[in-house]
Image (tube, rainbow, N blue to C red; front, top):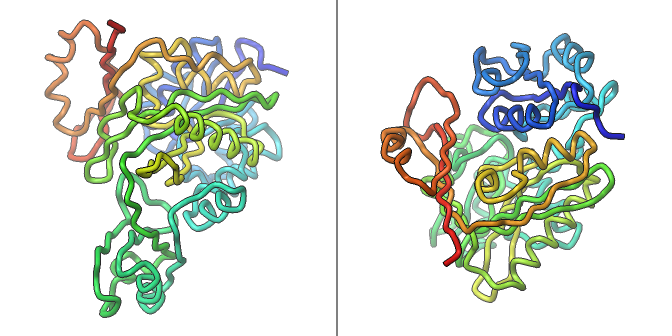
Length: 358
């Protein structure tokens, strides 16, 4: 059964993604309550209420559950125990299982391989000796990552054609936390698919975006991606397979490497709305944010069809100085996140340039 207009949706996390979810919920007639420890967060500026508390605070979680008809989240590092605690009294979407699968890179890749979706080769690493042995398997090259909590390029170290020895202190420098070494992939481009699954099991997938990262941070997403129709179809099918396997409800972001022959390896899952899907608010009738609210509220999914080609670009740090000039462009949609302080590496907003068919 779908939520009636006037119902309240809880959102764990108060960043820009929570902000855009709250805005989409308001358009569909829903109220929102944000659980976020940082006061006056971006999402709280547009939500109906903020609960200022830690994400795993039992009293705050009980308050959120009592006040909301359904709860969702804007980032994948919500404690699984908190999601499970909430789910005992209120529906939580996406399900805690999706959080569990996506929070640990080893668990994530094992899950993907288990349902027949290929990834880069990988080895768990818990100490310098295991790192040496893992690098031997990958000819001295690989990407060493923390298994948990890394994002925007943080918690990573790249090895290229190195002698497999003499790595004393590497794991300590990475924080003495569980690690994973992934083989280097000779990919031609990076793409992502934003897809949604409703309560009724229906799936809707947006067109793949071609993504460019610098210093581990997404800079641009371009539509259409420079891939063939068969590759695009395979990416959407993989996203749908993942959604079904997780009994998922809501929007997911699936990042892929595209190899020279057009085949795909999944790089990462994001069980939430995703930066590489921000273009949908400008180039589609139904944005990824509205699609997510539709899904968790039990409404029919909207059309994912794109009516413009486009390029989405993040505004990071001092990129905010570009805003006056951007506002003069006629075929551009600007979205700022309401963050008071600009600093290097911080996402302050994004814009999407539309490309009209000739």
